[in-house]
Amino acid sequence: MEFFKNLNQKQRLIFIIFSILILIGTVTFIIIFAMRIGKVEVTIQYAPYSAKITLNGTTVNNKSKIWLEPGKYTAKIECEHFESIERTVDINKDYKYLVGTLHAIDNEAEEYINSHKQEFVEVEGLVGRALTEEGIAVKKQYPILNYLPINNQLFSISYAYTDENEPIITVKTSPEFLDDAVAKMKTLKNVDLTAYQINFTPSNPFAIYKESAQSKPEDTIKSTFNLDKYKLSKGQNIAEEYYAATIYTYDYDRDLTYNHYRVLLKKQDDKWHLVTTPQPLLTKQNTPDIAVDILNSVNSLAP
Image 1 (tube, rainbow, N blue to C red):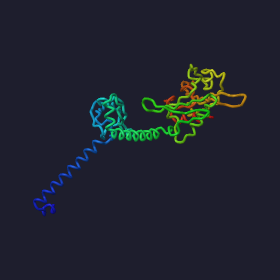
Image 2: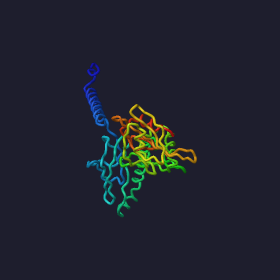
Image 3: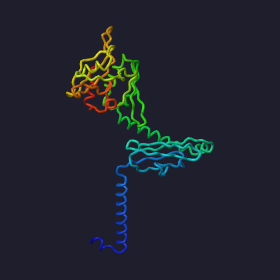
Image 4: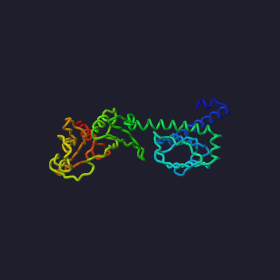
C-alpha cells in the first residue's frame, strides 16, 4: 500500500492497468483450463482446406485444433467437386485426429489438387502420424498384436478388427497341430489370453450338444458328448464348485495325445452342468461369467 502511495498519478494509472490485465489473464486461463478438464485436444485437418466439416451437425473449423468430450461423433466432410465423407469417430486420449483427404470427382477438383499440392502433402503426413500413434495405442491396449501375425508350416495366427475396433484372433491349423498353436500363444509375454475373442479353424467338433447333467462331473461330459473318437482326461476340482478336464484325441500308433479341448463344469443343485462349450482356450468372450483366475486354471491343464 505504501508503494502505491509513493507513485505519481501516471504511475498509478499504469500500475492499475497492468494489474487489471494480469487479473483478466489469470481469470481467462482458469476459465479455459476448467473448460478443458476431461476433454481431448483433437487435430482437424482435411484437404482441400476449403472443405466444410461438421461434428454431430455442428460446423468446426478445418485446419484447427479443438477440445472435445471423449465419445463417438458423426463427422461429415464436404467440398464442391469432391466426394463427400461421413464417418463415425471415437474420440479418446488415444485417438485424437480427424484428418484425411477428399477424392476428386471432376476436372475442377483435379485442377485444384494440382495447384494446391502442398495441402495434400501436409495432410498425408498427418495421416501417417495419426496411424502410427493409433497403432501404438492399440498394441498397448491389446499386447498380443505386438506378436501377430505368426505363420509357419503347422499353424497361422492372425487378427482382424470388429466394427468396435476390437481385435478378433483367428487360429488356422489342423487338429494334429491345435495344441502347438495354443502352446505358442501361451509363450507370448505380458499377454492375457482370456481377454481376447479367439476363433479356431477348423470348427469346434463340440459346438453342438444337448447337456445331460449328472451327479458326477465326468458322467455329465460322457453323457453329453459322443466320445467314441476321443479320450477324457482325469479331471480336477477348482474352487470346490468347479470341475475341469480335457477332451482329446489319442494316436495309438504314435502313443501321442493331441487336439485338446478344455471343459469346465459347475455344480448346481447336486448336479454338474457345463459352463460353456469345450474350447481349446477359455476366454472372457466364450465364458463371460467366470473369473479370470478360474479360466487360467482350466487353460493351464496339460498340454
